[in-house]
Every structure is written in C-alpha cells, then in structure tokens.
Amino acid sequence: MSAHGGPAGPGRGETPESRGAERLLRFGGGSVALFGEMIVVGLVVTALSLPLVTAVPAIAAGTRHLDRHLADRSDGLNELLSCAWRAVKGGWLAGAAVALVVGLLGLNVALGVQGLVPGGTPLAVVSGLFAAVIAVVAVRAASLWEPGADWRELLRDAAALTTVDPVGTAYVLIGLGVGGVVAWMFLPLIVITPGMLAVAMLAARRRAYA
Image (cartoon, rainbow, N blue to C red; front, side, top):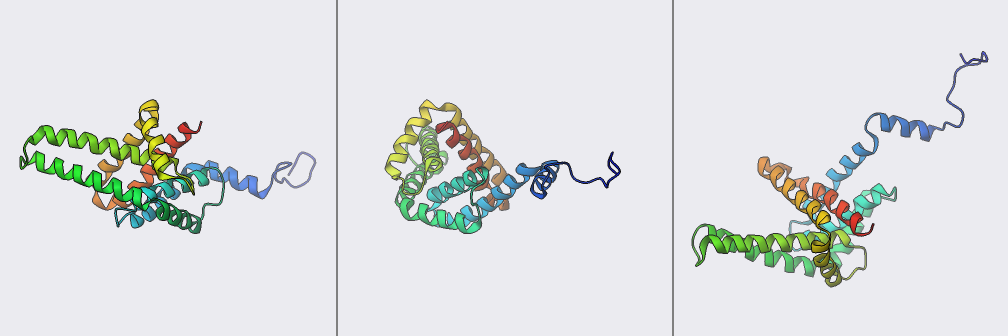
C-alpha cells in the first residue's frame, strides 16, 4: 500500500522500458550484451575469413558492427552480413596483399628457426617483426574502415596512426596477443578471437576519431 492508502505501484514517470533497462543493469546490462555481440562477430568473421584474403575486410565489418551496437543503432545479423559484403567487395585486394606478405614473412620465420635458410635466427626475428608491423597496420586500417572508404588511404592513415598513437596501437597488439594466447590454449576458441580483436580495434578507432 502507498502512503495515501492506494496500492503501491511503479514510481512516477517510470515506464516498462526504464524498468527493463534497470533490470538489465542489475544483471550486467550492456556488458553482457556486448559480450554476446562479440561472440557473434567472432563466429561470423571467422567464417568469412576462411579464404584468408577476406580476413582484413571481414574484421573491418565486425568492428563497424560493434560500433553500431554501442551507438544503439541497428545491429542485427542482416546488417552485419550486409556490412561484411560491402567490406569484402571493396577490400579483398588489400586483404590479399596483406595475407600474401604476412604469409611469406611467416614462411621466412619458420625456415629461419629451423636453420634452412642463410641467416637463420636473425632472419626469423627480422621477418617476425616486419610481419607484426604489417599485421598491426592492416588491423588499424580495418578499424578505420567505413562503407565506401578507399583502402589505400586507410592503410596510409593506419601507418601514420601506428606511430603517432602508440596507445591505440597497444590496444591492437594486446587484442592480437590475447587472441593468440586463447587460441593456443584451446584451439576451438579461435572462432571467438576475431570478436575479441574487434573490441580492441574499436577502442583504437574511437581514440583515432576522438
């Protein structure tokens, strides 16, 4: 009962939407929703990345999807797939170039560690560093992607940001490192690592546009 003898009811100005939001916050709210979107992004990006040349544009679409989700814009699966199609259509060539260069450098690392090429360990170390730099620049370019963007410009901007924004670059490196460790510890979890990387990329993106 209320103080005036009437039945106790919801507070003045309270709506079903506000009560629902309050319940969500009580049980984790946005963090739980973001975790769910991260899993969805991880699964979709993993599937789209199987041809390898589509990996960079696919993760770009995943990052944009999380950005829309956090901005309370339309973020359904159809929007994610549509965004991924546009990213792959315009960025598969850049993705192919990145995959080729990183693949060749990775081969150098493997051969150098085994001592099958001249230079051995030094070659492996240098190749590994170059591969890491290219991967970070490619990922930062993907974090900046918007529909219709020119990937050559994105790569140039990302190369500049990699040096002038070390904090954002650190976010990306941490995302890559954590994803690699998770996949190494339990290989089936590799399907969610792109979602984890997308979260780190989104943090770097928001720093770039802050």
